[in-house]
Length: 472
Image 1 (spheres, rainbow, N blue to C red):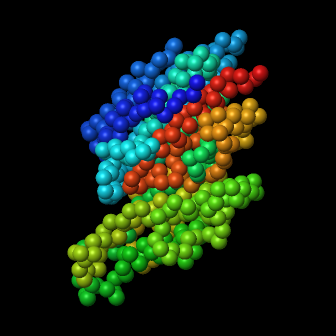
Image 2: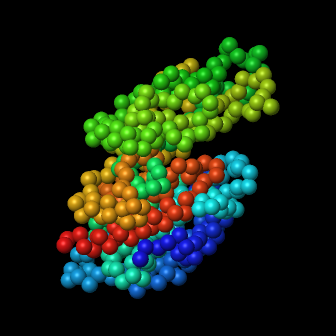
Image 3: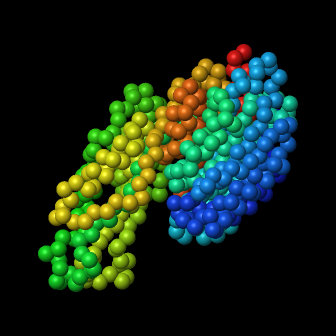
């Protein structure tokens, strides 16, 4: 029997509410994460929940490599009784993460990032949808199969704690755990999105991401603008000129060729299909101000811009006083943190080198430019599902939602998928999640739609059961 919302409320919700109160910010946002202990607290909480599950044979271990965030690994042995040897049965890896982004400003009245609030079937708190629910969904999916006497494959649930920082610790753990992972045949990632809450949505691609911080200096100290301006170039203007080398400020087009790739015709066809079925999915739900003209001339083009075209966002700035204390001073420097999304097939490290070169070569006026905080994560494009998996995905969506599945590309980044695909080129993927309309991942008022979490859990269980029968 599939689990119900009442089952989820009884078995998972109390611990999920505890998790919601923990400010386990990712290391990129909490440099003292080890001393603060919040990531360890969240990891221990979810590990305790895993140990309380009713599995015939399972191992729950928190791995801690020196200097790295912990990783929770739950290995649940297969319950199938086929004649294949254990080594030949194949492993299904189920992935999620427990680290969180910062609160990002003032939440709406009555809501708080670390004081969970339930309104109807929606739970509001930082990290509950991205990606706190994932461990509970994965564990309950396998447990439901065992409770119903349905055979399932060998499952390894990996819950990492550095995803929101670009997963810098993940590859080290994949190396360390390679013997435990064994022969990986299927990867189920629960850290993605959904265009609606009425079906199972499968992510077909993800953009990569580059990050760097650029500091432009023109003076050793700030000077009265009446004395220095007109003689010393503004550090802001020099920064602006440098950014114009990356992005056409009139159109938003990214200029370096190294940040582009050819877009498959099948991707464009899929964008046409999904916008015809669902509408202007790239724009709907965005809290744009009245009168804003969005980019893209059509709904399908906006999907392409969000999923297969590079973009530049300035996500942080320093050296600029707030307006209430701004004086007539030519500032000594301006610093900006850049986030550049790159298409799924672009080599992130080659792209980062291209960006470094653009920002540091022939700098206007000979200003001093310093780059720091280098991050590069590859994007990912899913291979076509095998026949058995295509059937299983359809059956899973119909059983859990009474609607066929949907397929679309995402604009975000999940480094784990690219890492796993490189290690296991033949692996099959089910990349899904609960980040649908108004989920607000990384923003204020993050929300988990509880019925969607239940539906995804039941869909995962259906796919796991089908994996056992894939060769029949």
